[in-house]
Image 1 (spheres, rainbow, N blue to C red):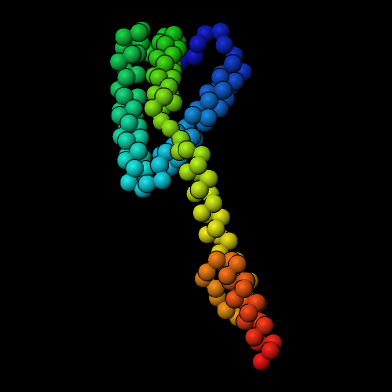
Image 2 (image 1 turned 45 degrees about the vertical axis):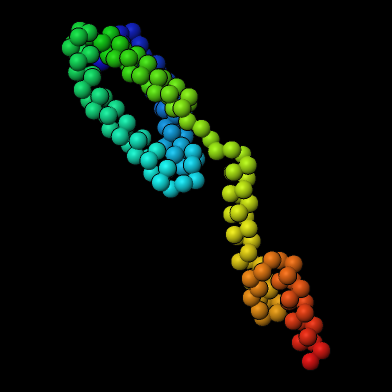
Length: 160
């Protein structure tokens, strides 16, 4: 399984480099469907396609090494495993290239509008709490209308 003439440090550095590149690829790949569409059904289709492709790749990864090892010299040859690694690396690069070419990001305007909506969603409950402590009322309207309602309620409470 080892390539002749290489030390422990060669294999350690190679393994660490592989894990770094693999993490750089797999983390965005796993979360890609959520970033491509805000629609739940579309996200589910993307995730389903990703899972089906992953299962096909798993089956190929179990079957293909046996075929390649039988064709390239057997388990005793270290070069066979080197060739096997090169073949799988080429497949990996083609899949990464396909993901890069055939996926997209949502437009910046859409992302900004989603972020603004989320910010307003979190701002409204805090504003309700402030109004509730100032005048004892919950205001469901815009901030300026709520402030004026609180001001008028406090003013009318002082005059009576």
